[in-house]
Length: 283
Image 1 (cartoon, helix red, strand yellow):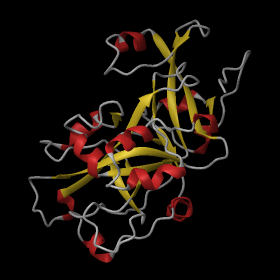
Image 2 (cartoon, one colour):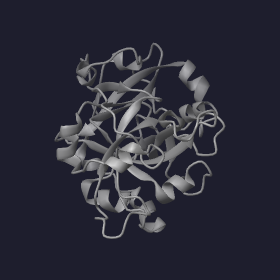
Image 3 (tube, one colour):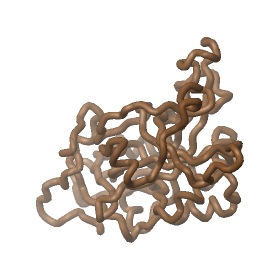
Image 4 (cartoon, one colour):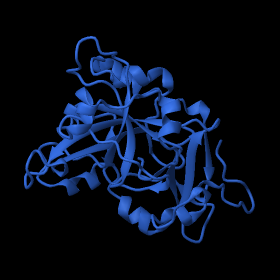
């Protein structure tokens, strides 16, 4: 799964990496038609419910003659709220969408078919479970959605945090989906009536990551960005992209336990943890 990540690049730095253009004035004036673009401060401990940057492609109904590969930057709330949801807090339970079922689940299938995005990150965090009082007994973290014993396992263990990022420092691009929800208590012309939100798609962890957690976010290499963002891409091709995470280009390392609390923030969270005795580095 992916429950916390870091993203410190500003809009200029992201533009250099993702080659996006600014939304048109008409799009910016119409929060119903296009997500907003707001300044988001560097955050090294992004938690569900946060406003995050996302890179979007062209909508399915783009005007004729528009560059199909043109991208734009926007801000979305992390935790997808389906258009039919009765209230927005459901998004806190929908920060991740399983790649194996994203095309069929009612909450995600429309977004997967028509509203896909890239979610930039410096790194993401994952937690390994370690038996209390026995640092040599470690097991991979699990998801409550797939592990009936998840709660009990967490209760008898402490969490050992790791960070995952590209070895060369390039930004990760999570495969994401996004959706629009209208607050029925507000007038449709009120900008605050429209909530744009997103989920990060996850998949089964690669062998080198499976010792830490059973799931991992799908990271798309730059060669797949246009295909992922194009609303006309065939569903079979999309499912194939969900298996393309370039794991051989990633590095993973243990970080300090300060990241366990969302109250802690700052670039020091990505410093490798001080090691005592044998190294816990996996790669």
